[in-house]
Image 1 (cartoon, rainbow, N blue to C red):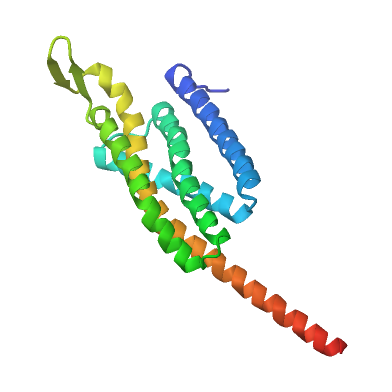
Image 2 (cartoon, rainbow, N blue to C red):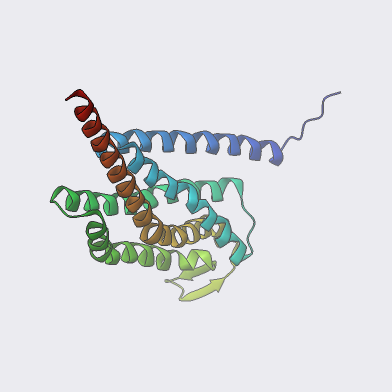
Length: 210
């Protein structure tokens, strides 16, 4: 005997499988592009970790709003959020690389990058979240009839999508401003340690040879 749930349950499972594959393909394409542009596996991985961690903000946003995690609309929100989060980290890391190429030390380059990119990152986050607030709170504004309604049926469908993007973006911005500089400093310290170790090994080999 085989039992299958059809109807809405079957449609939901198909949508979940499709969105899962779409997310994997999107992350893979972004990883290939980032590696070719930055020529660094660590920095590409660093950018993509923000996408993964931003899903925590998505779940937190649903928890605060008291909304269930919908497979279709919340999943689309996570995929949409990935592009915004990647953009903020690309801008941040690109500025850091430019300052490093100009001869700045790692710590100084990180501080200057945070000072220069703080305003663009915050403006992107604040304007996006404020623009999504009517959808988050299910506010429908009819300009022609001059009517404002809350909780209309037409708005309930988009609440999960907007809550996913707004919550995830707010959480990912904190990651961009705090976690990304910390990981860049760790990369610089590890690179310096490896360079010093290689130099000591070369000096020891030269002394033995002489």
